[in-house]
Image 1 (cartoon, rainbow, N blue to C red):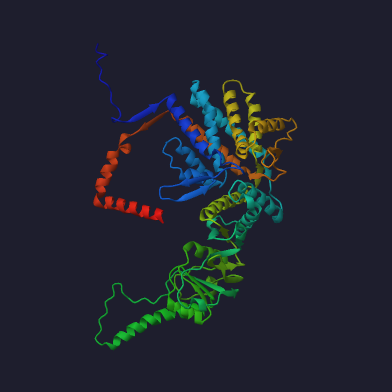
Image 2: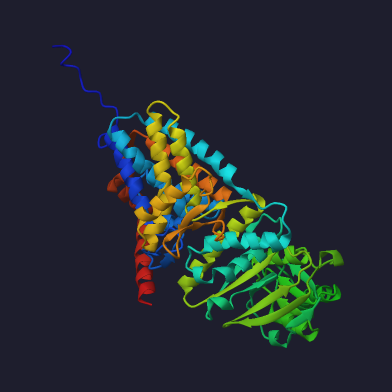
Length: 565
């Protein structure tokens, strides 16, 4: 009787939602597979694009896995892991973001029947980790190095890697044109690690083929005052002065109190202000510079002064562009015009101002240090140009990675099929349950070639059977065979120049396996009621007071107005 009367133990706050055990794990797996199904159709050269429309009315059309994952507002806590691995793949390697999400989703889908049958998740995790390390060893073994080739050979090999990346993007139709442009840009910056040394400027209008690469720096003409049109717009081998000061006539307002006993003294104060600005301008001219750029404003007086002396000037140049000009021309940004010596001045072969579409661009080309390049992108719609920029970012990252880790593997699902075959073979040598788990891991890897076929409208079963037969040949000659997107059959990916850096695949398999293991290791989710309740939000709103409500109302009006436009 006493045992029955024991009071109930209340551990968590009332309203806390806890779910645990097998149903919780299966629910997490279902959420992750649902996320991977969203990006599934964007894989490969025939992948479809997604149009994402957010609450502010912005429309993004994208094929890039990481961009789509970022824009999807995923609330499920387990599915957020897939968003994180897509982001990490994007920042680490640049490409393969769709692949990594697909693989993680497929590993979990293969694990689901085992979980439902009562297999302990730790057994699965152990086997998946083993399979992952085996797969990565196999990739390293199959990878082919491009080290030791001449620069021209290397360029053509890198262009093929870039073309493979671009083939699945919106600008895939012009992949050769853009691939060579990307390779030239990456080779131009050399060993420079900062990605912002490659500038991408977008100019609406014209066709994609009107895009061009500047071997140096290009930026839009900045705001200019009267007198600007009298300045020369082209120089050969000019000296370039980079400043971070204002060249404007400023009357002294801040904290200055001047007492005059005689009105005639006032003129001397005004003169002093003029002398200060003229002194600065004289020093700029005597330095011998023919192009003066400043991050802050260059006023109308200075503009006219420079125009009279055949000097080009531009004020309010963005920080990023100024740093790139400094890196390319060998100049140093000055915070004072006193004692400007030749060492701090930059130079380039040709400086000119050129019309590109409706915009005018200042272009510095033939820079001595050459550690920067600028791609000027043209195209019809704004969304199109933005997607082209994202695609080029992926290609630039891939070429940089291939330059640093100079090993490539066959693309088109070839490497995935070969690893899958190798793991199946390896699984037969293992006694016990883990044979089944490694087999399921191997099966999951086949999702890449299968999805490539599905997206292109081919019969996936037929193509996969051909691939399995080819990869099973004992001589090993079938290893580089992958899906041929053009004919719907199979082809030697190496011979067709469908290559990708080995680091992309290694990173993708690593990240996908880690994510799958992480989801499998979670068996309980606790949701605290406080963070969920509407009362909490209401209390926060009350604390903000009238200001918060006013802000919200104003924001609503602004949003409607923008959409109507």
